[in-house]
Length: 313
Image (cartoon, rainbow, N blue to C red):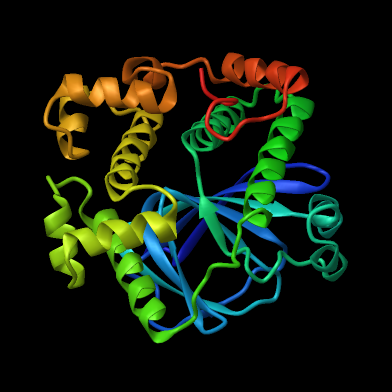
């Protein structure tokens, strides 16, 4: 029988670790309560889920980075596919205090992510970097080869620093907690679930709006306002990240991958993929991950990380 949760630790350092987690939907009991023992940052790679905690819910898709505070109970509903695969970065309490000290001193003293920091959008550069880093670490593990520990630590720390910086910098002063806002938030969350579930289809804005029960114009406005990117870009990112995940797993047939990812042609897929990740699908399939990571590390010494471009190219 398949396990409920399969965890494969791919790297452990002094202040953080990286795990490749696979959640089995079929064996996940309803209303199961879990909690993390350490501060944890999660990036979804396949599937999607809804996490319920503190009388709120957060949607986890490959377009998001989500944050888990230690000892905080939560429940997870799996939304798409039989498995949900995620990269989990577990952080020591000392490192979390360092990351938060200049941004939210009160949260740093409590050794917890700020209450409002539940999730942020994951830009293409972050996603590509973490995925190639995971592939590099997995290949080192399989071959029993040498891992450049200093390079790995420096890259992960820079990535975490950027993620936490973006999350702590969000302006929540315009958030409306009224009934109307709650309805809009529920619709936007439902729209994200629909796209995560059906990204391989030729979805239109009308299709998504009909599925969540509102007009296309109203959904488009509310989605961009709450999520931070237009609905069509959110859907395209889901498609392209699904493609990158499958390429890193060894997918060979690019034409089939394009069709199953929701693109009308191989050429459309290839050009969209290169715009998103600054690398072609063919190059992604046989990339030299170690060389790419070394280039990233060198750029980190030259300039401050920019959300969408620093880790691409």
